[in-house]
Amino acid sequence: MLYILLRGVPPFRAEPEHRIFNAILKGHVDFTSDPWPSISHQAKDLVKKMLTSDPKQRLTAHQVLSPDTPLDNAVLGRLKQFKAMNNFKKVALRVLYNCGYRERNARCGGSGLL
Image (tube, rainbow, N blue to C red):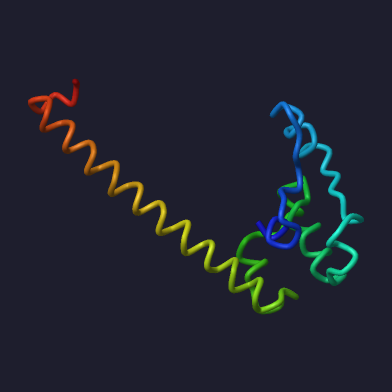
Protein backbone atom coordinates (compact mmCIF):
# COMPACT_ATOMS: atom_id res chain seq x y z
CA MET A 1 0.00 0.00 0.00
CA LEU A 2 2.80 2.41 0.79
CA TYR A 3 4.29 1.81 -2.65
CA ILE A 4 0.92 2.61 -4.22
CA LEU A 5 0.49 5.71 -2.04
CA LEU A 6 3.90 7.00 -3.10
CA ARG A 7 3.92 5.95 -6.77
CA GLY A 8 0.24 5.65 -7.66
CA VAL A 9 0.46 2.16 -9.18
CA PRO A 10 1.15 -1.33 -7.78
CA PRO A 11 4.79 -2.49 -7.64
CA PHE A 12 4.10 -5.63 -9.66
CA ARG A 13 2.04 -5.35 -12.82
CA ALA A 14 1.74 -7.79 -15.69
CA GLU A 15 -0.74 -9.62 -17.88
CA PRO A 16 -1.72 -12.43 -17.49
CA GLU A 17 -1.86 -12.90 -13.73
CA HIS A 18 0.75 -15.68 -13.58
CA ARG A 19 3.32 -13.12 -14.76
CA ILE A 20 2.48 -10.97 -11.71
CA PHE A 21 3.17 -13.98 -9.50
CA ASN A 22 6.54 -14.50 -11.21
CA ALA A 23 7.39 -10.80 -10.79
CA ILE A 24 6.58 -11.03 -7.08
CA LEU A 25 8.81 -14.09 -6.69
CA LYS A 26 11.69 -12.31 -8.42
CA GLY A 27 11.11 -9.31 -6.17
CA HIS A 28 12.51 -6.74 -8.61
CA VAL A 29 10.93 -3.33 -8.06
CA ASP A 30 11.71 -0.26 -10.17
CA PHE A 31 12.87 2.67 -8.05
CA THR A 32 14.30 4.70 -10.96
CA SER A 33 11.22 6.13 -12.68
CA ASP A 34 9.13 9.03 -11.40
CA PRO A 35 8.41 9.85 -8.64
CA TRP A 36 11.18 7.80 -6.98
CA PRO A 37 14.06 10.23 -7.65
CA SER A 38 12.23 12.86 -5.58
CA ILE A 39 11.31 10.50 -2.72
CA SER A 40 13.61 10.32 0.29
CA HIS A 41 16.15 7.54 0.64
CA GLN A 42 14.52 6.56 3.96
CA ALA A 43 11.10 6.13 2.35
CA LYS A 44 12.55 4.05 -0.51
CA ASP A 45 14.46 1.92 1.98
CA LEU A 46 11.29 1.36 3.98
CA VAL A 47 9.35 0.28 0.87
CA LYS A 48 12.16 -2.10 -0.10
CA LYS A 49 12.07 -3.67 3.37
CA MET A 50 8.29 -4.02 3.15
CA LEU A 51 8.52 -5.73 -0.25
CA THR A 52 11.26 -8.20 0.70
CA SER A 53 10.24 -11.60 -0.65
CA ASP A 54 11.53 -13.48 2.42
CA PRO A 55 8.79 -13.21 5.07
CA LYS A 56 11.34 -13.62 7.87
CA GLN A 57 13.22 -10.53 6.65
CA ARG A 58 10.13 -8.50 5.72
CA LEU A 59 8.93 -5.77 8.09
CA THR A 60 5.69 -6.44 9.95
CA ALA A 61 2.80 -3.97 9.93
CA HIS A 62 3.58 -3.22 13.58
CA GLN A 63 7.18 -2.34 12.71
CA VAL A 64 6.07 -0.13 9.81
CA LEU A 65 3.61 1.81 11.96
CA SER A 66 6.02 2.25 14.87
CA PRO A 67 7.12 5.79 15.82
CA ASP A 68 10.70 4.98 14.70
CA THR A 69 9.63 4.52 11.07
CA PRO A 70 10.74 7.42 8.83
CA LEU A 71 7.30 8.10 7.36
CA ASP A 72 5.93 11.51 6.61
CA ASN A 73 3.00 12.23 8.95
CA ALA A 74 0.66 12.62 5.97
CA VAL A 75 1.59 9.19 4.59
CA LEU A 76 1.29 7.60 8.02
CA GLY A 77 -2.12 9.23 8.42
CA ARG A 78 -3.28 7.87 5.04
CA LEU A 79 -2.11 4.38 5.98
CA LYS A 80 -4.06 4.54 9.23
CA GLN A 81 -7.14 5.88 7.39
CA PHE A 82 -6.87 3.04 4.89
CA LYS A 83 -6.68 0.49 7.70
CA ALA A 84 -9.71 2.02 9.41
CA MET A 85 -11.64 2.09 6.13
CA ASN A 86 -10.72 -1.53 5.49
CA ASN A 87 -12.07 -2.52 8.91
CA PHE A 88 -15.24 -0.50 8.29
CA LYS A 89 -15.64 -2.13 4.88
CA LYS A 90 -15.37 -5.63 6.40
CA VAL A 91 -18.06 -4.84 8.97
CA ALA A 92 -20.33 -3.26 6.34
CA LEU A 93 -19.97 -6.27 4.04
CA ARG A 94 -20.73 -8.62 6.92
CA VAL A 95 -23.90 -6.65 7.75
CA LEU A 96 -25.00 -6.60 4.11
CA TYR A 97 -24.36 -10.32 3.78
CA ASN A 98 -26.30 -11.12 6.95
CA CYS A 99 -29.23 -8.91 5.91
CA GLY A 100 -29.33 -10.47 2.46
CA TYR A 101 -29.07 -13.97 3.89
CA ARG A 102 -31.92 -13.40 6.35
CA GLU A 103 -34.10 -11.82 3.68
CA ARG A 104 -33.45 -14.65 1.22
CA ASN A 105 -33.99 -17.23 3.94
CA ALA A 106 -37.36 -15.66 4.88
CA ARG A 107 -38.50 -15.61 1.23
CA CYS A 108 -37.61 -19.28 0.85
CA GLY A 109 -39.57 -20.60 3.80
CA GLY A 110 -36.47 -20.86 5.97
CA SER A 111 -34.62 -23.23 3.62
CA GLY A 112 -32.27 -20.57 2.21
CA LEU A 113 -32.91 -21.94 -1.29
CA LEU A 114 -34.77 -20.12 -4.06
